Structure formats: structure tokens, C-alpha cells
Length: 450
Image (cartoon, rainbow, N blue to C red; front, side):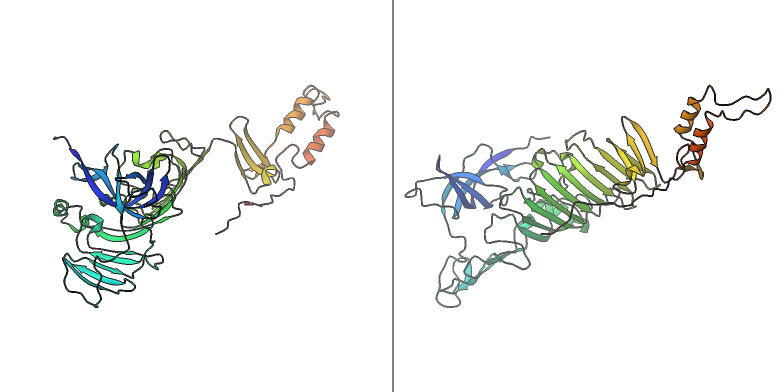
């Protein structure tokens, strides 16, 4: 097999200045338009020339940045930013402008490769190009654009940017990771399209992304459809691959904790709820298509099969390999119930019923059964240790001999204690002594919404 070649290619990208690093006059820039889409996090770039003074470019300015990318590979496309390359700001530009011409009459003549019209006061208008692109703007920060060409997710698309949109989740600052996408994937290139000839090869997806803060580490992502593609911060890929048959999924990140909810996967994980400890970066994991792989380390996992089987694992160590759990309960399709817990196990009717009716299993001390309301086998109470203690106490004078072959009644010294134990509920046996369980189960974790 021939070696895969990669070459560095410089490209001009669009971004927004976030902040300045005063120590070395470096600007922190969020890239929202590049050959590989928007960046998950800012880059650091310097001005390629001194533009008058240091105050010319400020946070919030739209800038053009030259970035070197790695190009090539098996699919012959842009892969990532070239390692250890420098980034330079070429200058600022006005992202909100719709056309590059200003006209007084409502409809213009054909100019270059486009025609259009705008209002000379507000700047609102529409323009159309020879390629079929259409841009509609209000003259402010709201605009819509449609294009009949492109590859991957950018083919035959319509994009709208707005501060308040009642259908598409978006903002007037493109570096927000908030978007909604519904579309059909036909292929990432012409060669890829030629291999997708069957209806099953044309994948359709609906996915939504909402950031909790400006930080790309706090996001909520959902996916609804007939398959389960990449979810998360690396979801900007223009290639969609069919993965699990999940119909609905939702992922929430908060720091190193991740909650994953999946539904619709045939088999044992028809419903899957996980709480993971993300100890290593998801992008560094050598895995295929899927959502937040469990290899990051489960702290909690609940799976329900399409047959009604259930498996719960809790108190996980959260380690990526050899994950140990403190609790495991499962029931299979034959009705076999398995319960494991590394600590004490208590079965009772309520929070305070451990002293009344309960079974306690201690890994060190053993098993204790408390049954003040009665403990029976086949409807009959059992003799307990108190009776054996009474026999042991009077083992040398338990019976009083009268004559050889004659009756041997209980000795007068042992008889009163025997009568007392036999007539007292629960003294010599496991009879009911009259205390019933409270059946009170409390939950101190009060649920509340925002």
C-alpha cells in the first residue's frame, strides 16, 4: 500500500477577535469560517504588519486570518491545522455587509457575477450570483444565505443567522456553538457520490447544539434520526457515517462529568443512560463513529433491552479500563435477578424498619435477619438460640429422675425459666411479638426545576 501524503496549505479564514494578550501583542481569535468549519476553541495570531498602532484591532472585530492546514490523506481533503504553524491576521473586514456595491435605483444592472438591490439608507437588500447563491439581509446583523453547490453538509443548504429566531437556534456572533441542522448527506466529494448508489447509502440527520456558556466545554447536543453519528465538540465534520441505530440521544457535559441518554438501539441497550468520568480527551480516543464512548469510564450506567431486560451499574471508579463498580443489579429474559454490592446490603420495608423487619448482609460480619413481626418456614416458627442457651445452662440437671424406666420431668430449677420462655412471644422461637413495619420510605433530595 502506498504511503499517505500530507502537505501544508495556507488558507484565509474568517474569525472574531476575543481578547488581547498584552505580554506579546497576540490576539485571541475565534475562527468560524475555514476549510474545516468553525474551530472548537480560539487560536492565537499576530498582525502580519503594524497597522498604525496597537489599538487598531480590538475584541469583537471581524478579521481575516491566514492559517496553514494539513491537506491530503486517503480522502484527499483538509484534515487539521498544520502542527507548530504560526497564524497571522491580515486585517479587519465588515461581516455584516451583503453586497459590495451601493446603488440608488431599486434594481441594478448586472455587475460582475451578481445582481441585486439594497436600500441606500438601511442597507437591507438581496443579491443573487451567477452560481445560484442568494443572500438576503436586513441591513443589520441578520442575514440568510442559500447555495446550490458545495460538498458534504454545505451542499444545497440554506443558512440563517439571527439574534432571535423562532426556529433555528443561532446568534449574531458566529463563534457561538449553537446551531440546528437537518439534511441529507450524498457524499463528501464527486468520487464519494459515485459510490453511493442505493437509497440506504443516503443518510438523513437532524441534530441540535446549544452551548450553556461561551466556553466550548459546556454544551448540550441532541441527535434524532435513524442512525447515530458523532456528537460533541467534533461534530463540525462534513462527513457523516452510519453508526448505531439510535433514534434519540442527548449528551450533557459539565466539567469532567458527562451524561449520555440514548434510546432506540436494538438489543440490550434499547435505553441507555450513562454518567461518565471524562478523564481523557474524547478526540484522542482511537474509536470509530459513536457518541461519547463508554471507554471514558462509567460512574453510572442503566441499560434496558428491547425485551425488557435491565442492567444497572453504579459507583463506578470512572477509569477508562478495568472499570470497577460498587453496585450491580440485573434481570435477564428468564427472570433471573442478580444483586451485587461491595458494602452492606439491607432489605427492609422502610427507612426505620431495619430494627423491626429486615435482612442485613455484611461482607465482614455475615448475615442478620430481624423479624420481630415473625419469621416462619412453611408457616411454622423456628427455635432460636435462647432455647439452646437454656438447655446448655441446665445440661447437668435438666431432668429429675424418679425411677428407672419412669418419667423424667424437667428439674424444678429449670422449669420456671422454660415456662417463661415458652409463653413469651419471641423468647424461645421466632413468633410474632407484635411490632409491625412502618413502611415509611423518605427521599430528602427534593427535585426542583429552574
